[in-house]
Amino acid sequence: MDKVQLEKYKQLILKKREELLKELDYLKDSGLNSSVKDVSGEHSAYAFHMADQGTDTMEREQQYMFASREGNYLYHLNMALERIEKGDFGVCVSCGKDINPERLEAVPHARLCIKCKSREEITKR
Ligand SMILES: [Zn+2]
Image 1 (cartoon, rainbow, N blue to C red):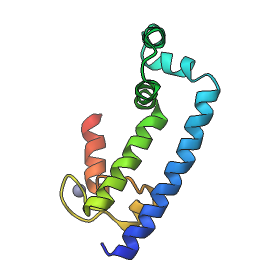
Image 2 (tube, rainbow, N blue to C red; image 1 turned 90 degrees about the horizontal axis):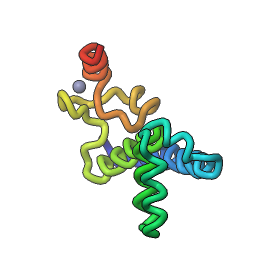
Image 3 (cartoon, rainbow, N blue to C red; image 1 turned 180 degrees about the horizontal axis):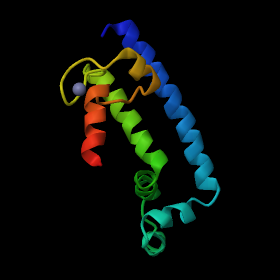
């Protein structure tokens, strides 16, 4: 993939990432605690414990992020940015072929080509 294309996807991902971060901020302000509790039952006890110790909130935030759907998405966007830096962006991690540009435009953080993705979904069922 040439640099111009890479740059285009990079901008696309950065934009999505920015929107997502805003959304996460919003979630944080609007009672994120309750939504996280749904994911891991014991979270509130954990949060209190952490607060008592006055431990690094960053770490707690990361816990939130990974517990939520948005956080998961953010993780994938970050990984895609990393792949752009490393130069293996747009290549299917499963079969090593180029991922269809149309697919990348719709899902810039895609790691699998359509073939492998659908195979993966069939296996999951
Ligand atoms: Zn593939």
